[in-house]
Length: 180
Image 1 (cartoon, rainbow, N blue to C red):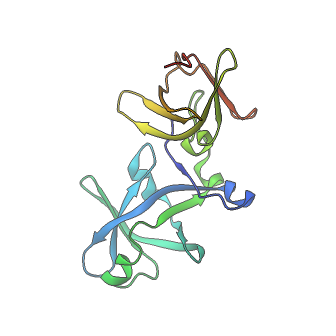
Image 2 (cartoon, helix red, strand yellow):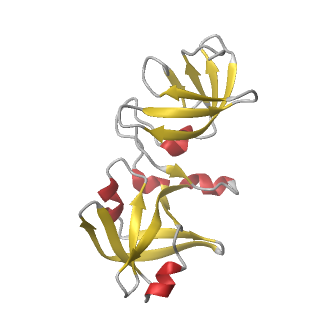
């Protein structure tokens, strides 16, 4: 599975955007920031020349400068961020790219998390369980968090538990006991 969060969707046009990370912390005194990546390989976030900051005023395209890995940390300078206080004002800001720049999932059975969120989930017998609310990365396998009318279910995202993901049809079918 390829991790990438969905963009907040206020309109159908936002479906063309995917949140790939966020500004996570400050780095240095000259406006550098630490980045948190939602991508499978976190350092891939640094390959983008531009990222779009999702601000309250809208989406802004910014060039990324001086990007590098500092141990497990990703750090960069962002165009227009000239000091520590300007960087501090951006803490928590989502970072987006157009969906086309991600290239989609690269292998069968790989999906962008953004494509799974909100999909209805039902058992193989057609019993509705709810919709995918979020996903959890556990190391062994990802887990679907399915929010239903009666409860929240945690379903391992494995071929055994999730035999069918139908993105075109807009649903996920699971081999799961509805009482569990």
